[in-house]
Amino acid sequence: MSDSKPKARPLSPHLQIYRPMLSTAMSIFHRITGVALALGMIGLAWWFTAASVSDAYFGFVQGFFYHWFGRLILFGFTWALIHHMLGGFRHFIWDTGRGFELKTVEWLVRANLFGSILLTILIWVIGYGVRA
Amino acid sequence: MSMRSELSKVRGLGSAKSGTEHFWQQRVTAIANVPLVIFVVWFVIAHLGAKRADVVASIQHPLTAIVLILAMASILWHMRLGLQIVIEDYVHAPALKLACLLANIFFATGLFAVSAYAILKMSFGL
Ligand code: HEM
Image (cartoon, rainbow over all chains, first blue to last red; front, side, top):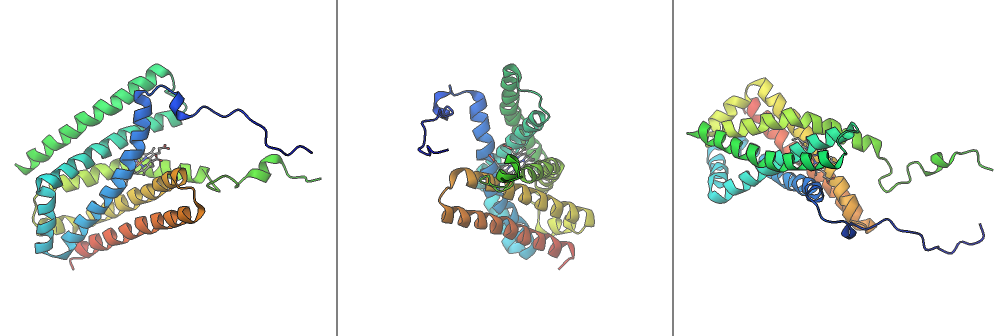
């Protein structure tokens, strides 16, 4: 143990040497949607608070979310939520040690992406149905 | 000569000082989130464009208030754990990292206090 000089050890390959794939994108998407949802939670807390304050203030907040920009935020929030939840299901499967074959992974990330788009649209159709 | 095993010497020395507990709580809250988040989404959709009185009336049912508070607790705990990992992955300067980790805890706890207070206030009809 006399030689304490750092040796040139092999490094694990860095991210950029891998070919970008859908599964890579979906992995980072789980993180992005998680952080986006965290910001969205401010909106939910704001909505509850407004409902507990006064008619006028609640009307203002309902108006904010009804504005096209507010609805855009809500639509994005719905999609992030559904995408993150389905991604969570994928993690649950992986946690049991299953679903690591490349074919299965490819299938899972596709199901995640298309499933989240489909479910989000479905929720909004139902939402507009409830309102009408 | 030390009698300690190699494993016991390094235990707790990882960047997060702990791991399994964090992982496990992330999973527990993730599973709890599924029904709770569906309930919250349904609750918000059901009150699209509603008057304040309608929202208050719904929350006055004890079960609604309890489930909403559980939802906020589970979601925000999950959020706190998740954001912690993101901070630990990207913020490396010790002082800034500590500040971010503290801010994260205050953020989650604050949001919970504000939401739970609002829900209870409506539920008690104040
Ligand atoms: C709807 C049910 C949800 C499920 C099933 C779920 C599932 C999960 C799982 C399994 C992880 C761990 C991923 C990993 O170990 O890499 C995770 C991470 C995370 N979740 Fe959720 N989640 C849900 C809702 C939410 C909500 C509502 C928020 C925000 C308030 C949120 C924020 C986060 C964050 C910030 C992370 C960390 C992301 C990362 O480390 O890359 N999740 N989620």
